[in-house]
Length: 609
Image 1: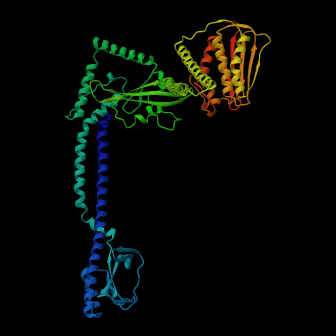
Image 2: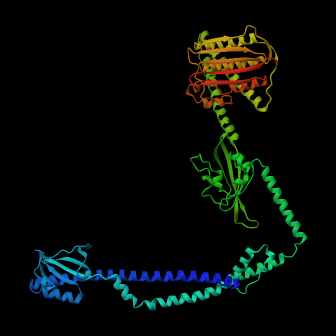
């Protein structure tokens, strides 16, 4: 009994749905035909009324010209009979009926019906409910004899009633409905017959769903020539063959494929670049462990699988859509773009590449492979390179221009006195020294880049070292009227240092302090000793450094965006070189600063080198 029910369950369900939708379609069509018929009758009635109005007005105007008002009643009655009007009347200019198909209304004041106003060009009218609850449409037009207006023609027609239309259509309904319903029933029988093989397949699939294993169900073929039945029969035959023990070569081939797939995943998981594989719908099917690290998320790689690619690579804090370069592009094209991503370590720049994946042996698309690479350092290097070019251009152009100008003046002007010549020569020498210093900085920077910068240690009298440094920076202090104070311990030790590089570092720190301190400011040099280190403080009351720029002050070519700093000549290399020199001596350089309050640089040097 249960098998019989399962056999007829699917056909019965399909037939019921088929009959339901077909019945709804027939009913909908019937209602639509009735509604359209009513609309057509209404429109035809209105057009007929307007045509009769024109003919009637012309007939009345001709009769009025010939006989005056003597024959108006006869003409009105004739029009009423010919056009099957509800009523027809002629209204005088004084508002009384000169003629009316209803005899009691002749000579009475004209009554204005209350209803919906109508207008058809110059013709006016009203739609209202008359006696016996009948809906009437009254149209009126002005009657003119020659150039003389003598009245108004009113005609009224009954509007077709919707329920009357339905009643009239009901007489023809059986002949129009029986045919489609008969075809629907024949279709139900045919569909039931067509669905029966599918029902057999459905019954066997249900048995398979409730069975423990596939071997517990004896799948049978179905008798039909349809494609679905033929496909099912082929599947049954294949399963029957698969129930036999697999051959040794099949097991070996499967093992080799599994090993290759495992090896491929191991390689992808070991890459430093992020790898993502998406299907045709943009859902992630694979992600290697490097991807979450590059995106700065705490998710595991497996947690990303199944999510949409725009959700994985999107940045909630970004105003623009990071995947916009990939939208609207041909899916079979390789596309490379750069996106910005904000994470805990700051703003990162990621290079994103999308490569289509084609199915084996076919040209159709199977999905995409996305590679994500962090190019933040490359972008920073490019930015630093641009800054270097700007600084180098400025630092080289200005001294060369001055040297060229003064040299040409000396060569072409023979009237210069000795003092002016000496002044020009001193200027040329100063600019040449400036160029040499810049070239030395570049050479030192090159040494730092390749790791070849070295120091030549020798025993140095630090008291004499600081005296030489102060002598070099004192003119700059005096020029800006800066109060320069120095504080040293009573006894200065001798240290093993590279005297020239340490002196250059201290001159650079003190020179920066003087350069970025306004006139009448203050600069202090303090030296302290403890059991292990010499601590050197350079403190000023200058423009200071903003908090967001402090982490970058030791970067090569970095210069503050403060306009007061930009006005001063500089390459942005001094602090970077100073930090490297102190580091090679085993010390470090620290900075404390507050904008508009001044800065403090602290260098430490070990007492035993």
